[in-house]
Length: 209
Image (cartoon, rainbow, N blue to C red; front, side, top):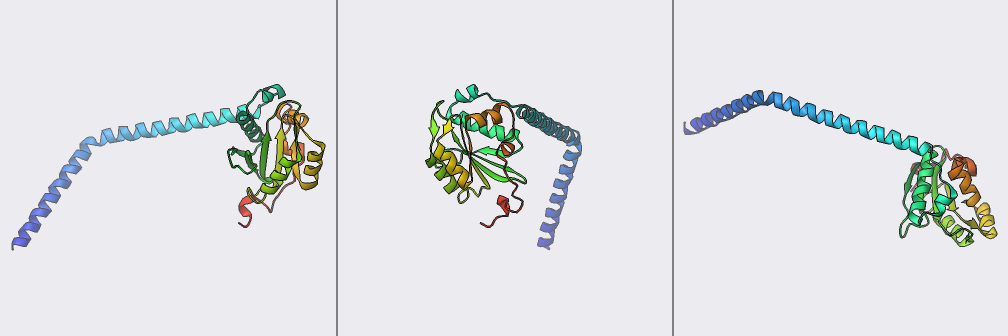
């Protein structure tokens, strides 16, 4: 008998609590609706701003032109970001990755069906030359470390004759000052400038680990 009374009291208390909650919810629903509308409006505004910003960035990059004198005046990091932006302009999904221990990769990009590209940036004083050792390093890490289909070394200077010859023999592309002007200033796409072949069956996410 005592247990039944306790159970009944608990049931009544729960019913009263539920009733109070429903009453409060009924009283507060206009405020909840307004809060929901405000949240939805805020999210919509954020999406619109983001969309406009992305569109503006795409339009800006599509018109991107950088002169050699501007590239010469950059620091190493600025130069790497500039190369990333140029790849994005050309349609690549590119990311700047250069840092300590980057294993000879400053920018990595992906573009279907061309595959994955690794860019090693060598910002230098005008007149300086990049030697063969850079080509050896990039050739040794582009595939094993970065699973790249294409590797390219870019400088605002020039390359030694041995470096260019070695790169041509072993598939490490090079962009010297003249080619950089065609890419950055004249607006020619990097893959067109280098004649990069498609890699339909060798996209990085389809490779075996």
